[in-house]
Length: 133
Image (tube, rainbow, N blue to C red; front, side, top):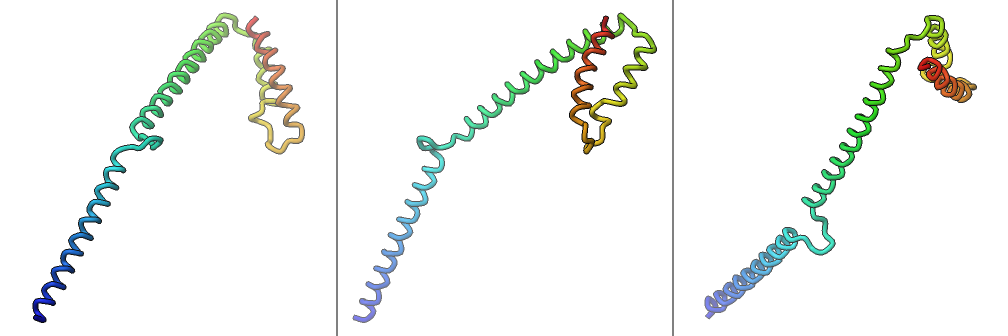
């Protein structure tokens, strides 16, 4: 009789263990299905990558267009500079002005730095206009 009771207890324990394992496997399977299938409002990584790559391509094409416009502008400027050579005294004066007032050559803690930068920007445009004719 004792062996019969022991066998029944062992069978019940095995049945409970089997049911517990079954429940855990179902929960794991449901979790995997939820992770594979995007829910409403969930992040769709391929779509996010695609939108980012499109935005990057758009930004790069805009950048390429700006650079092409700048190249065109610089070519025109170079052509104009080659057409009318400036006088050597004017070139020397322009070089000296740039040496004294260019923002790259000013010390960082110069008290009149902003004034010198403003003067340089204003007069450099005037000098370029004179040089172009």
